[in-house]
Image (spheres, rainbow, N blue to C red):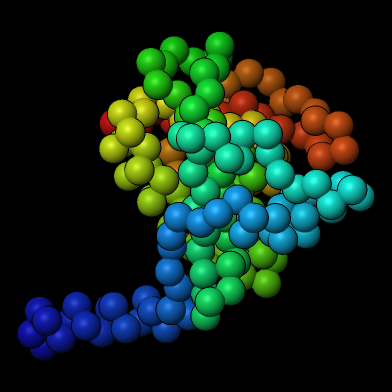
Length: 165
C-alpha cells in the first residue's frame, strides 16, 4: 500500500467516526442551548450569558456535526492569583451535548483554542473544572492546584491550569 492510500484510508476512517464535524469561532448566542441543557439546568430565568461573552478579547468555539452545534467553550483574558502568568486566559462554559460525548469534540475545541491562545501570546489557561471533567482536563495537559471546592448549585470543582508554549 502506498503512503497516499494509507493517509486517505486513515482520513476517511476519522471522518466516518466523527460524523464529518467542523470546529469554528462562534457567537456567544450559539453557546446558550448547550450551556442551558448541560451546564446550568438549574437556571430558571433563561439567562445563559456570561458577563464576559461580548468583551473584545473573548472568543467562543463550537463543534458542529451536520450543521448542529454539539460542543462549545468560551475563552477570555483573566488573571489568576494561583499561577504566575503575564497573559492568562480563563476557560468557562465548556460542554458537549450528551448525545455526542466521548467522540473527541472537546479535544478538538481545546486543540483549536491552544492554537488561538498561542497566537494571542497567552502563556497560561485556567479554569474551575467540574469533578466529572477532571480526567478530560488532565488528558489535555491541565494540572490541578489546591483542594476540591464546591460551587453552589453546580457541585465540586478543582482549580486547573495549563502553560501555553
